[in-house]
Amino acid sequence: MTKICGIYAASMSVFNSDLSLNAQKTILHAEKLIEQGCHGTAIFGSTGQSQLISISEKIKLLNELSQSKYKSKHIIGTGLNSLNDTINLMKIALSLNFEKFLIMPPAYYKYEDQEVIKFITRIVDTVPESRIILYNFEKLSGYKFSPVCIKELKKRFPDQIIGVKDSTYNLFESLELENFSIFPGSETKLLKGLELGCSGIITATCNVTAQLSRKVYDDFYLKKSQMNDKKLCDVRNVFEKYNLISALHSFFSQEDDIYKNILPPLRLLNSKEEEELLNNLKSLNFKLGSELAA
Figure: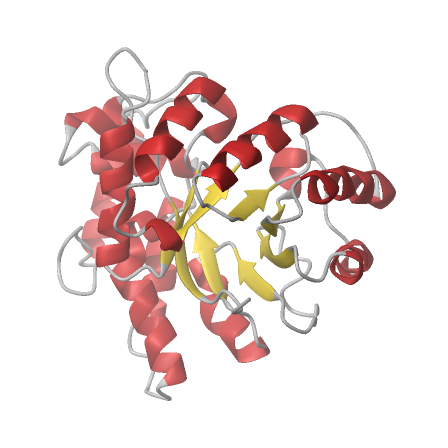
């Protein structure tokens, strides 16, 4: 299988006023990110509020997403604590010819590497045709993948374990594995990661930085001067002052009120935070949809 590389957005989910998932608009949002420069998207990651969305709504979206013109460019997050629910959702996705998955170990409970290896082993043994990007985000799951754990999983399952999204940042600077994709979870790590041999990024703020991120990525491989990396990092740093989901939904709601719908216990930014966000972006001459701005 070809190694996955590029700029991937952890795509947002869009909800109706009754807080039901709007599958059509969620898919259109993801497709637009690809048209703006992303190589693909991660559907139902943490930015997509996956842990808060019902399984039935996920299945409905997967069925509609299977008709997407960019079907092959989507990675499916599971966002489930339950092992059996994770496996069942993956089976449904695989039946629709999705094979790439972003999987985080369960939240809440405490465990170590050996327990994670058992968890992933059960998944791979049950759905061996899957291709898995491990999601390393200690802040959310309470667990941090070690290089030893990653290497053991890759050794056991060389065809199934294809990469890692590193949002804890303990891996991307030192982990080296053949035929294995490493994606830091922030635009601020994109250029350094590429210099170290990483494959790109998977990030929340690529919902707004798709063009900028792609330009930095392309310029690196074309060996051009990096004229956009500072602005890219500055934009990320503005959003990072807040909960990213809250900030992104508040930002997009400036153009479409539907983005004001967000699942509890998450919330939009308050008026003071929103004003600060928009003013800080304005000071960077950053506007969604402008040239090299989104």
